[in-house]
Amino acid sequence: MLGKSPIKQPDEVFNEHTYEKFLETQYPRYQQEKRAKELVKIQVEYGRRLPIYLTSRCPFCGEPKSEPIDTFSLNGFGWGLANYGAGWSADLGLPPKTPGKCRHLRIISYFLNLRGQVPVELFSDKQIKAGPEVPSIMRVPMAASDAIAVIHELPVGRYGEHPRQPRYSVYFVSYFTERSESFAEATKDWGVHYGSVEYDDVDYDLVSWAEGKRLLWLDNNHPELPLVSIADADFPYADIEGDHSPERIITCTGVSVPQPDIISRIMRFFQRGKK
Ligand SMILES: [Zn+2]
Image (cartoon, rainbow, N blue to C red; front, side, top):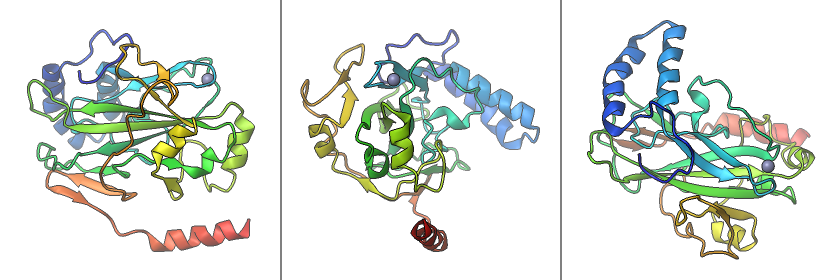
């Protein structure tokens, strides 16, 4: 597996060979399968055998936040809910993870960055609906005075490449508030509830947030990936390049950007104005 993880891994965790064997047989089956129960079975086995990574640690209670993530390739079943705010594995049909003792995590957003490459190794019918490549900070939840964001990067490999090399990056930005009321107040004008967030109002100046100690990160130079701030180390995510388009469709021939849905944006503008 690519990237560090201090978390205990599942017994039957994939390696790059068992992973490809699994997808070779199960991906075509998944495309043809009509029975929901069988689809869930495939997804559950896939999710159960993925490596588990830390995505953040809570700045208030210290609890580590982790989930299964496919760093082997972009051909897996995940990658579908970049704009949903519930992490990477939310669309795998997995049972909800035990929330643990932490009551402070509000949003997990992620950003898939192709680092200037065309993923020619994608299955020919595979389409990934992704958000922007470059991680940003949503101003709306950060309007809560106690909100703190945590960023972490994981490398992602290319299907068929042995041994795996880090080719792409996935950035996680997790939002925490000490009080649930402050998050509710800051996000009250969002048309949706937790689990589906709005990326209209974002700030790409990560350095400023880090300097203000509102943006922390997991230290990739340490095997335990401790939570650090600008007081402890240099901020490693200052100059990330890439596409800022809020919606991208990634296929094996390249990336396209759908036309913005003007009507829904106008509707939302008027709905907000009424509040
Ligand atoms: Zn916590």
